[in-house]
Length: 285
Image (cartoon, rainbow, N blue to C red; front, side):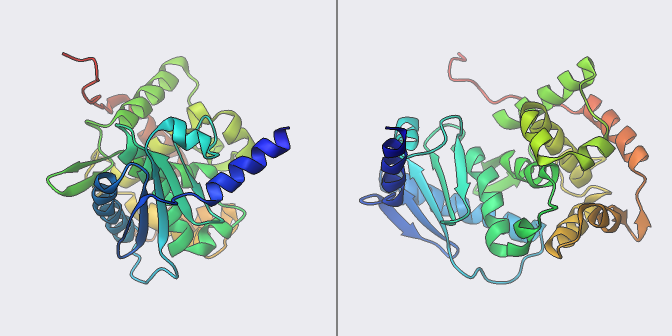
């Protein structure tokens, strides 16, 4: 019986987007189950995100094919079509499609998975590197997840009016207080299996370290003193370097090797002062 249920879900997902509203942008095909309004909104939002990806990771080429985005009208529809029950969005690397559903956090859900989609299409060798660590892949995606659109522009790494940013900051501060926080050296060597088992902790910590590298000593300007390390790590994993080799190459700024113990101390101090503001809640008066 389980086989037939799985087969039915697969076939339903394979027909995803039939009869939905559609739009084409420079880099994407957008499909919306609820109609034209959601498609018109996200044909703009997704291109704003793409520009941020391209700028942050110095991509000036062209995608071999356009990315696909599917937005269900509800969580029920999303799960019924075969999505993992605990997920809020996912990226299917085989079909090159991002799938989510309409929700007050849709932009943030999509921004995380669209980061994976961008890297897969713009830098195929990045994810084909078996030594790519989870903390880096997911930490970068979480940085983009913490975003907000204001005045027709998108802002990345925000710490206000973003539920996910607030959750991440609270989780990191809890880890500091309960001494669950791990050393940077331990995170850098963590296996994918261990990361998965501790995902509730590791997603926020991974985000916080990437956020730190990107912004320190600021908090959201994207002009951090260690930002060069982010770009160098991307380049290293794109080139297929082994993990430790990639770290040797990546943790360098202005031709000077970074001291991981010093980074660890600065990161922990940075977390102590980090503040996030939760957006207004549905039941707020």
